[in-house]
Image (cartoon, rainbow, N blue to C red; front, side, top):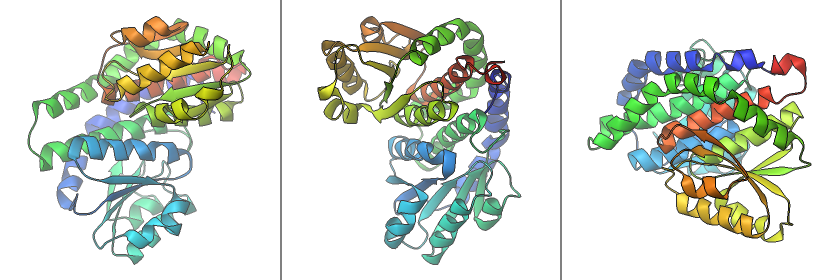
Length: 339
């Protein structure tokens, strides 16, 4: 697993991904026929939780139907629904796993257009696809840098597609500008929020179990971090989308159980998340939150809150993921991780 020092390199890698990818992404997006049939997004291995983020982004920003599928589900069910020239975006950090290559092979049998989101243009996945969106991360397949750069790249790809191929919008331009400033904000947040993250990690590590709750683009973030905490073995969190939490585990909660809500004041599904948090507090739950300074309703309900700079759901989800990755390393007992 990555050390804290490695995670502090993420802003630099994110800046490289966004700056060097800008022209490449635009060129590839112009070559592809989008939106004529559903876009399938398959995250492989450790990238699996990020597939839904791509689906949310394409639907919200570009207005194109997008479906997130695991490689196994895609092969068993979705491949039969593919049309000729359907776009299949496969996400894999290394681009070397058999799962991603099999997904591309199956897509090609139906005449689909496989595209890759990966770090190496020379990987087997990149060579098997008709186009590659490159990230500039480093480390292992499951690294924090890979996850953050993949999520940011998905945001950039969807924004670029919407700006190029849909009606121009000042709102889209503002989101694009915010994404470009994100590495600088991430650097600031890493410096200023270190103590708060360590305090939150200490609280969560003392719990037998807790839930991570998110909505919209924060849902893939909490799913990724539940996997990360389990891999580290330091914190026992379970990730869940807000509406599923509201209708599933919440009615059976006992007083004193805990949840970390990850959100932002500009979350499109904010009303649902606030309703879920309110009912959680009625149940007597211990509510921790990571959100921005303008999300007063959630902050006021929280027993402890880590306050982020106020940004959009797009930038906020990437920033929250990076900070949660830093928290996981900062809260680790093992010196090789915390150092």
